[in-house]
Length: 336
Ligand code: HPA
Ligand code: ZN
Image (tube, rainbow, N blue to C red; front, top):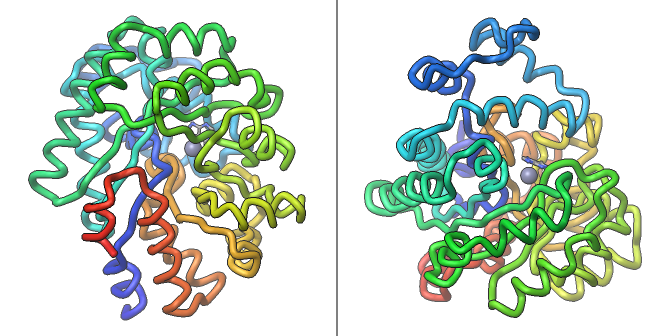
């Protein structure tokens, strides 16, 4: 359709994409076979890629999804597994008209399984270089920390020599905070974010996905974050929403994710119109596309169906995404 083509051609930036969340049931089963990984035998969902895909359509919460997300990762062993995973995502991103992608991964989830950080990073870096070379997609890599683990564990990972090397060399641009939100408030991670700031790293955190608006203000005040991942519960605090609009902090909204994880009943309940009316800057993203039934263009299309945005509004959303990116000014100017 003409609209699909218009949305496809917009200069899209993706800021909220977990590379581990791009693991399709097909790739999951292929890697399990190749790496001789036994999938759980007590869960019928692991009977076939089809069954697993069907189970993904029935998530009940963030934690229900995360259970499958962490099992899924168990098949990722070698550098080329991580490269295949990320390359699969970049090919989808290219088809969808993504110009620039700032992607997350979870070092702790792999290190805890005995996979060295350098194995993970080498694979992801190879895919990023190939994406720039063959697809013209520029990239930034962001290490996310798992908030359901003790803050001391996060800090210890952040301070690992190889992790620090990847920050100092500029291979990694910044840090994020993900996994279970309820029960794990942002202020637990103040020390790590303070150190990241001193080192000149960019900082973001998931806040206000399942957690209350007070987690957004705490993430801004105690962690000094420069972006807010999800942030949909910002609408519950008008004063805070006015502050976020005034300071121009970008929210990385993931509409399909919010519906599939039951943070909102339907796409029309994602506060897109409220954010536009309040002057909140936001980008639209896919989060974990292989788990949530759609990549970035599906998210754009679903938002358009629900809100019938004006051409100018779509162009404004993409401009905010470019300006809120963590690439250099030259690349932003190219995209604008
Ligand atoms: N929220 C929290 N943790 C995550 C997510 C998410 O949407 N995706 C992958 N890890
Ligand atoms: Zn996320």
